[in-house]
Image 1 (tube, rainbow, N blue to C red):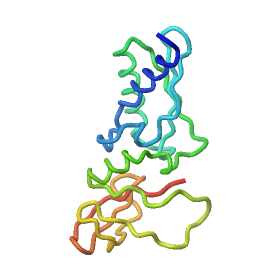
Image 2: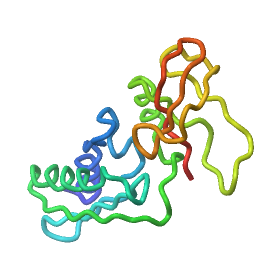
Image 3: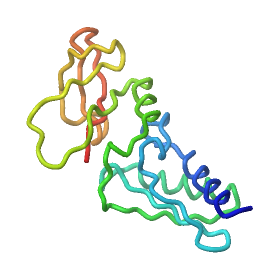
Image 4: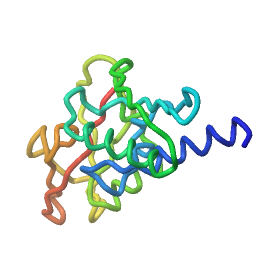
Length: 163
């Protein structure tokens, strides 16, 4: 098999691993899958960047990657890379659409450097109203905030913009 085909196959194996906290998203959708390279023989190195440095899902993702590669005859070593820090800008458009269909408002806007002093409207993933309010800066996980829609009154998670 040509090297490029092998590289594509290795990437696709890793890209099928899902986030244990949001199972409709692959680690590729989230943008945390940064690199997959062959080290020689059947050894593979997978580089991932957590959404937060203390993200509790990293251990499960590491084991899932090792299992996914073992099912294809490879031995995977997973490296966590914290620099540069993960950004919501790395999420794919299809990943953001999957988030909304799952009931989590995707991040609005692009990441930024420094402090943002204006509020951005967050669209309700259920009724699509922009008349929403933040209930808590932290939702079910650290990467999400808890919002409520003033139109349909439903609470929902919002995946925060991080850069």
